[in-house]
Picture: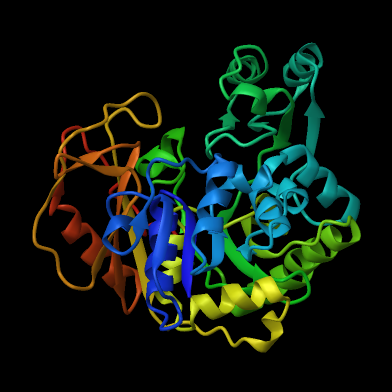
Length: 419
């Protein structure tokens, strides 16, 4: 019973490793994959995640594939799950209509407003002049967001009107994020503690995963530009059982119900980026899939069989599956290319020393060049450790970071410190 995973980052590496633990998983395939994934799966690097015709042809030609897991945001938003399903193939992930909850920030904000789901106050613009007039009169700080998908980088926190004018211009005029910035959302800046909650859902039953916390800014102490994520840890110290119950009641279940009422049943993994404010938890963002790098600290703690969970979600029988987690902690430190999230060099040799058995390197931007492991992306490797608590896992992870080197490598030194 072979499985195809779509994607080539650290998230997909973590998914592949979790699936490989199942005795029900036969051969693993990955499109396009990376150098790390290639150790446990057959990678098809010649096909991109957006080449739907070739992906469907690949599944058509491999009768052993019983399930395709679509992990990244772009192919989900463009309807790869719909196209696979229409061809009679089993696919894990939301439909294009459901993935709109991530693909359009304006849609998600309207959804939350309509159904009373707590979130930041906002205004939506597709007219540059009106957006400029708004930011000139607004209170600061505020947040400017590109409406569409922007690799996790289309969010700018502005401390004054000057920064806001630049952000609006970059998105709507200079097209820094291409068409993703045709419409923008300008939000109230929320103050509090961030928590990430991922949920398995088949549209009827929803099972939250263990909590985690991402670090989006490039440098220590949350300085620098927003990135796709520079590291994460699980569990969050502030996400108590009481808070989890409130989030499930006020945010998670109302969101699933809202999507159903809108005719957009969500089946897959729904990610809730939360801010725990003095007024209670509020939604910062939704993702229509596993987060990256949250997946790298959540799935290592999963005791249950991920293959079984995926199949149950597809079949709409998640209520029949017991999802259990280890009572431990996990920390992931991202090693990034110099210059990221801006321009950076590729093809730089990566050297890895001897690592303890309890350290996992989740490859994100790696490839092989004539047998040499080299960099191929901005986020290169996630050094991940499990421990009895976050403090122990953090020490293990940072000890292992010293075993990996490549020119220009940088990383945050404060992952797992802030609560």
